[in-house]
Image 1 (cartoon, rainbow, N blue to C red):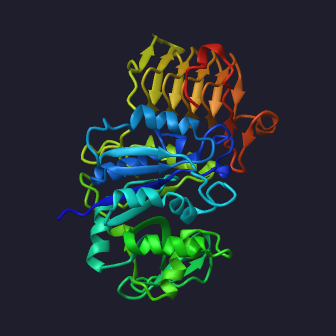
Image 2: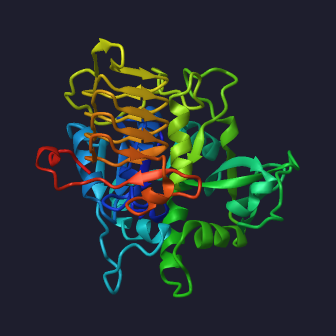
Image 3: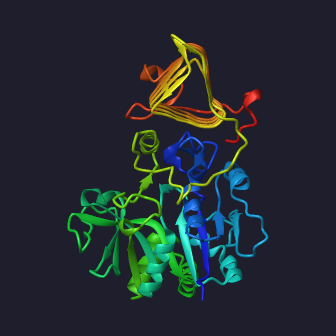
Length: 418
């Protein structure tokens, strides 16, 4: 008998550390890799893992995310158990509040679990960039006869104070949780590494529902899986196990390929993860046809490179160029361009991320910058060369990444989604 699986994707995060990229949109709706959004990774993982019953729980600044889900992730509705449905905060609790924590988000939607009557519930976040065969984690959960299974990422112990660390015994059964402690227990099989919680869970349905109801009745709880639900399950002697993400196998990947997971919660981390994509052999393979990364499919014309004159040559080197871009006599090096970008003659873009529908004027120079959607750079402008001057108008990180906010008021650019 086939296992009935219901998935919840937690996509309500504000993403404050990614400001100003999250000024007008939720973090899962932030562009990544030219044509994608961050949420495309978790949804692609679920679909590739043959999990087709999915609720996306949304909350803050959700319009851009809703438009993306509508454009790229709507099933036909002909099959009862094939759906991806966005669910706004239901405000079912007393006081009609926003979701108070990850556990409260699921608790406020218990009716969806009751309607679906699944054998297991998978709860995954939408804030990270990763490839994962979730079906393998479910099989591990069933094999171990666990109440809950937590995805665990082995990391060097010197980074223990940056993560919620899972303590396990030699059989990977969870015996404790430690929040950002430099002296957190290491893995029994490797004293140089700790198990970092990835915030992704598989639950047996009956025990999940009971735990959520008990947690909701506790006024002292912060209603969070990592802080409340899971530690209480451990203290109640329920069987929780860690699933070692390093053992996850993605079809179509090289046998020695390391599992890919990145927290892109800061501008610098986001920049580094994006820049890796345009390298010769990136850590994240976007070209694996056996594990495709899906997104909205727009009817964009192909990218175009025009003029072949000395000093006026449309050219891109070690870069990603998305659909409908036109490089008209401009140079792009070591950069990632979103959809519909225009690079005019004499301009140079280096080591930068350019979001959809930006226009780089003649002779402009852009270096180590992120341009949000709809930015129009004037002729001859320079960004990323004088950081003190850039700070007067833009956000500049400690490492010198300049972030230019998008301009939504431009008449000819207004049709592009935020």
